[in-house]
Amino acid sequence: GLANLQTPRAGSTLQRKGSDGRCALDVSRSMHADDVNPSRLLVARQMLSRVMERLPDARIGLVLFAGRPYLQMPLTFDHSSAASFISAAGPESVPSQGTAIAEALTMAATALSTDDRTQKVLLMVTDGEDHEEGIAEAARLIRESGIHLMVAGVGTEAGVALKNPES
Image 1 (cartoon, rainbow, N blue to C red):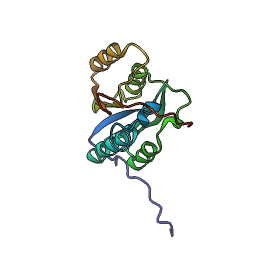
Image 2 (image 1 turned 45 degrees about the horizontal axis):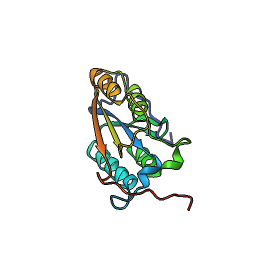
Image 3 (image 1 turned 90 degrees about the vertical axis):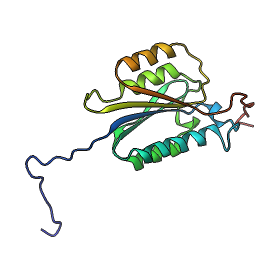
């Protein structure tokens, strides 16, 4: 009695209206370029944080990618955990470098819920450097499955020479 334990009433469920959003974040070494201030990666992290703030009722998930995509966090309403994962994301978060955009798109879309009642959004944030093929085909399949695909590019058209992180 001291803990004020309670049992749920029959039929009492929490209904949340919102969307399922999967973020695919490029964490390749090229995201450390400073052609945008302070760096592409920090701008990308800030962008994702602002998106989450504007979608308080959305379930958020995270895929990090470089040479391969990695499911960092499944869909969740826990935006504070998502923010923690995003703020810690970087090239050291993944074991292989490169940029596999098509694979990241495919994994992020596959990890979205198959529930037809929620709107599904996939937001990819990348500098656009790609070492693979198949982006157009992956994007076509995503659109056909009813997922809204948005891609945000980070960086300038002119770019900048990358610094060697070991030096």
